Every structure is written in C-alpha cells, then in structure tokens.
Image 1 (cartoon, rainbow, N blue to C red):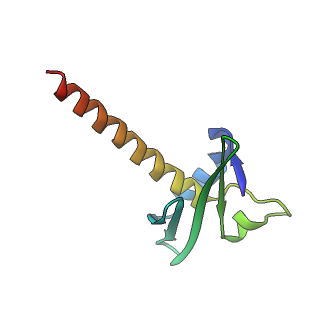
Image 2 (image 1 turned 90 degrees about the vertical axis):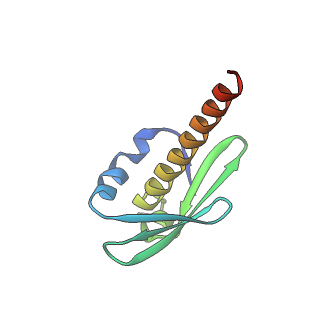
Length: 103
C-alpha cells in the first residue's frame, strides 16, 4: 500500500497511462479492476483509509514491490481518475437538484 498525499505522485504513472488503453470497473466496495486493453492484463486496485489518510494498493508487480518499496502504478492512476470523475458527477448532480428544488 502506498499513501496518496499529492497529485505529484501520479506524474510518471499518468505518463505511462497515456500510452495504453485502460478499462476500469468496480469489483466491490473500495476495490477496482483495471484492465490494460493494449496488453490484455488486469490488476486489482484497493483503496483504504487509515487514521484519515488515503492509501492505495495494486497487485501488479510495480504496485507490490519495486526495488523493495511499492510505487505509484498506472493502474492506481487510472482508478483514481475514474473515482475523481464519479465524485465530480455526483457533485454536479447534487448542485443541479439543489438548484431545481429552490426555484
């Protein structure tokens, strides 16, 4: 598991992500399957909160151990992008329903 602290952690992972097509789908609460459509591989990304901090882990080789410590991998980056998109859509839906209810 790696603690998510800032967007800077995703810079290299996002660069790798842009070179390949990924599909992301929810497997269960807090766990996502990320399929590399270019290579035909799939890995699981899990998010957890511990003492107010957000952590992510991936079962890919980079996410499990890269030179003894896990790194931010493109699979976690893909899952985070999807989660951010879902959160933004939910915020917009609430804003629209709040606006419609106050007319």
